[in-house]
Image (cartoon, rainbow, N blue to C red):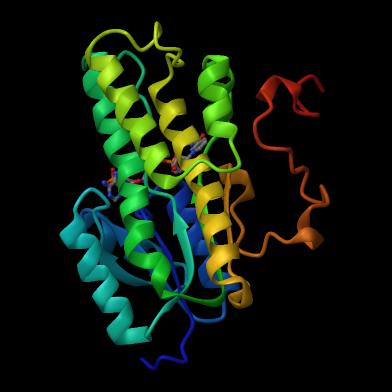
Length: 263
Ligand code: NAP
């Protein structure tokens, strides 16, 4: 593999939306596509499934909760490709219905994967993104919903154009602490742990996009957070038309106000 070969990578792509993204990238992206999974057996089974469809993804293990695993992947990308062109942060855990796990434990686990893990991957892999690279953090409408269920004080902090990464991490840690102490509602949080973690991912993406535009403006890297239906690595102005039945909505407004909500 040479450093001239372009490479795209999707986290948590042994099944679900991640697998679908890898499938489409294999069809449309001119370069190598790396399918990653925390479990090697599940990951290799997914690769076999795509190979049976005539596609040729590569495989690499990645557990986003494990810094060592992220760093081994980073070293692989540096050695084999000398960088990274497309990163889709898809891996996450969603709430299960009727989950007997205590609420605060669910909050801790979900925050660890959805926010901390995604941030750790960004910390290690964003420096590898080459000029004109694309980074997509898969978020959720539930994040915007949770944001709008938070107190006006919290909403103001999350919506601030100057919020720092450290301040955001502090807020995410506070949410977990507040659930442990049974005071998260009193402290102005939404009851949706998943939504709070996904709001964290969206705000983190705004912070990274701001940093990239300040520090690497000439590199024309595009970083955004989106709902799964919008996962595309070329989301530019040209693609803002609702040609696929989708419309871009301004971040921060409650999902009930979206044009299609009452259609
Ligand atoms: P899914 O079927 O549950 O797949 C999640 C993927 O993430 C799996 O491959 C899972 O691996 C992986 N994963 C979980 N923890 C991981 C970790 N620590 N390290 C690496 N991989 C890990 O979920 P999905 O429905 O496809 O959702 C994909 C993304 O879309 C998520 O970010 C989700 O929040 C978002 N989303 C989904 C919906 C929806 O309706 N499905 C709506 C809005 C947003 P294992 O197989 O090993 O568990």
